[in-house]
Length: 196
Ligand SMILES: Cc1cc2nc3c(=O)[nH]c(=O)nc-3n(C[C@H](O)[C@H](O)[C@H](O)COP(=O)(O)O)c2cc1C
Image: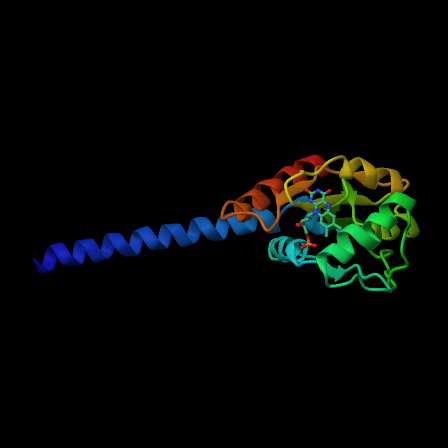
């Protein structure tokens, strides 16, 4: 009986040990990607927290600096006031609202996160892309949405960020699911090949 228990214990240790080693290797796969040798920034705008949530997940897998794109005049906390008031007006007028100072000069690769707002990116992200010099830089979009998908946000970003190269976006419904973590790892590995 004692012998059987020892064998079971040994097998359990081997099993968990292998799982740990596999997890470590997966982690390394992301850390060793060629993007990793570049200076990377994760810049995002988030009104309700979903895009921030995804930005933090990406940050946990990529060696990068991170900052939040913030409009000088914050949006109201009330959904209707924001969605059907100011954001809708900005969308209709094509407004690029002033944002707090951002400096992208030191970075080669910039992950740009936005919620889908009225079928495109949120206006402060438009300001961020239009007012900085993206010549020769690589943009990697990540988008959260409420059911409409990623629209043509990656193309809209390329149009605003003159001279940039835009890679494949990550598109997530709200905060994603239990699969999102794996999707992020797969996406980063795909980006690594695309970047070369
Ligand atoms: C002003 C506004 C406009 C929106 N427009 C869209 C839209 O066109 N399509 C869509 O799928 N979701 C839309 N949504 C939902 C958001 O894209 C979605 O909830 C997103 O995950 C919010 O991200 P956040 O929590 O980081 O702000 C909109 C939300 C707001 C507040």
